[in-house]
Length: 321
Image (cartoon, rainbow, N blue to C red; front, side, top):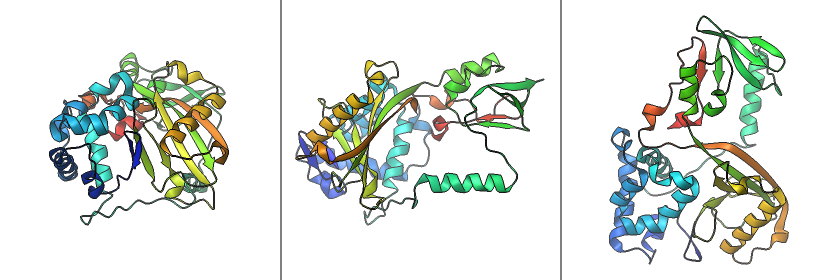
């Protein structure tokens, strides 16, 4: 669904788009054609050096861009909104459009029991093969000899391994000791936006949608996701309310209770009749390195997952680009 001009609208089908009175017929057709072309496109390279905002304006027109995209991009990336690569955005439009068949029926899936099912199975497989899983042991550096990685340095000392694969955010890896300067600079160039996320547990759904976009300049949230509308949890309803912010932003350090109260107030503006007493539980999570900022030309900035150090590999979510 979409919260536009003070009203919550269905946005689940092409017929919903055609029903938007705020858009001209030409803008609606251009928007639909962009989705179709994005789904059919296979090569991202010609989009990489174009900004997402310029690409969208050219594809769907300034009217549709301002109504449906401009505020979302600003709330996701703040001062970086105008420099995000069109290739990054195209990938996401294509992924969402691929959830529909040519009859326009949408199909989304989930793992029963959530990601814990996958993590637990992976952990069991590692242990069954004689592996070890070490937790609460932060890595502070690499053990390197003659341009080859021999293991990692933790607070408990050196741990030796045949190879090291890091999935920590690249800016974190940039701070490790014994990392060559050139590699440190390469990892440090990958900028990220942070996120504050309220997890609300309610006694019932807010809407019948899985994902609700918010495009209202007076609300600092780009939307919320009702996971249990896709994956039921036996009567409990979980709502994920993200607010993307630079980690240096003053709101990033606000107390959890205050953030939850503000997020609930914003949700209440979107969903008429929402009563905060319906919230059974709430949690706040923060990540300073949530979303890589994939600017134009990002593939030339992104270090290869296989590093120049023999035996060392580093990949984070920026490699989804």
